[in-house]
Length: 99
Image: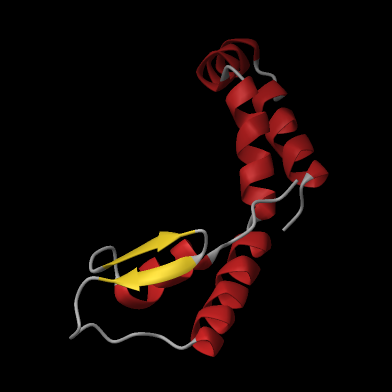
């Protein structure tokens, strides 16, 4: 299941880390001078962040597979044995999770 972007991520993106807090998705501002985004602005930012996060799912999926490989040893063995095991494994992962 893909991560769902919430109000906290939208607030960080729009106004930074400080001067606000959330409880059950209700926003409390500690600083009266802080520019407060509207509900529409927060919803729009959440949609943008969700779209950006979803667009790079292939990168997260590839990383899981890359981490399973012992890539240094594979490259060394390929050099010693004149094989392409490492390249083949990387290309298979890229084919499994295309951009």
